[in-house]
Every structure is written in structure tokens, then in C-alpha cells.
Length: 202
Ligand SMILES: C[S@@+](CC[C@H](N)C(=O)[O-])C[C@H]1O[C@@H](n2cnc3c(N)ncnc32)[C@H](O)[C@@H]1O
Image (cartoon, rainbow, N blue to C red):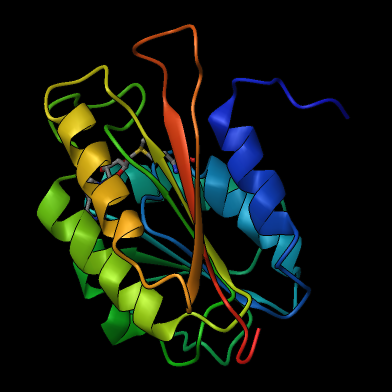
């Protein structure tokens, strides 16, 4: 199917789909309404695991509903480890992602900003976003990818995205490939950053 050229989430999904296999572990740093978690779960399948974080209970409730309706085994909070297949929703700051990673993930997504339809002042913040990205970078498998979709339409959004950009730009090129995808003719459009950890000796 043709991807809508400027729809960054679709490109994020396409680029993550290339590195995800049934049985893998994937992480959604911002569960929100569950669309990205559902995408990840479809890639890793019934034998795979998705860890999905949000600070807002209503986001996790909506996401859990969406995933259950699609037939996923869903666990909220404690009770599933990374060796158990299914979707684990975690009501916690994604800065703590490392505490929940029992094995190395193949892919992660961070769709930044606020919950669509929810409180627009409860947004992702640079400090926790960068802490989560640092932790994920350390744990990601070789060949794995992390996608970050940034938004400039809310206060602090552009600055947060630019800090993520700087973080990506400072990753050593011997170990990382990084790209940025932007819309050229719309100033406030979302943009996408993707990081790929190189395999050894590549
Ligand atoms: C743009 S929405 C995510 C959209 C979602 N991925 C989807 O598919 O619908 C951003 C979400 O990040 C959550 N969030 C903000 N700061 C967070 C943090 N530090 N840790 C975890 N979640 C956070 C918000 O509550 C909000 O639901």
C-alpha cells in the first residue's frame, strides 16, 4: 500500500517493521491510544512481547482495550516478564524503561507530545525522553532501530525534538546510523528520527 508521503508515523512503522520478527521484544515508550503498540504487536505476533509505557491510566486502559479487541494477551503492571509473550502495559515514566527490560529489544518507538483527545498539557519532556532513549540505546540489539516522532505544535515540542536530534547527531557513527525525515513545505509538521544500531564489524 502507498504510504502517505508526509505521514511520519507511517514511515516510522515501515522502518521498524523491517527489523521486527515474530517472537521479538519491542518497546512503545508512549502508549497513548495504543495505535503504535498495536502495530508493534502485529509485528512480533503471539510469540512476541511488547512493553508499552504511559503515565496516564486512561491511556493504558484505552490501549489495553484496543489490544484485547485484536486478540492480544494483555497484562497491566507486574506479572509478565520479557520471557512471556504478550503486551505488558506499564504505568510508569518511560525513563525507567531499563528496569523492565529483561532481554534486549529489537525495536522501540516514541511518539512524543500529548495524548490525542486528552490533557494537552501533559506532554513528554526532554529529560525523561532522553533518559529513555539513552537506556534503550544501551540495550538495543545490533541491527535494531528506534523511531522518534516529534511535534512542534505544542509548547516545548520543537525544543524537545531538537534535543532528540542533537542526541542522535552525537551518537558515534562507527556504532550508529541515524536519519531525519521532514516535510519541506509545512513549517509546523511532525518530523521523524530513526536510529539504527550497527551490527558488529559492519
Ligand atoms: C502522542 S501520545 C502517544 C500516541 C500513541 N503512541 C498512540 O499510538 O496513540 C504521547 C503519550 O505519552 C505519554 N507520556 C508523556 N510523558 C511520558 C513519560 N514520561 N513516560 C511515559 N509516557 C509519557 C502521554 O501520557 C501520552 O499518552
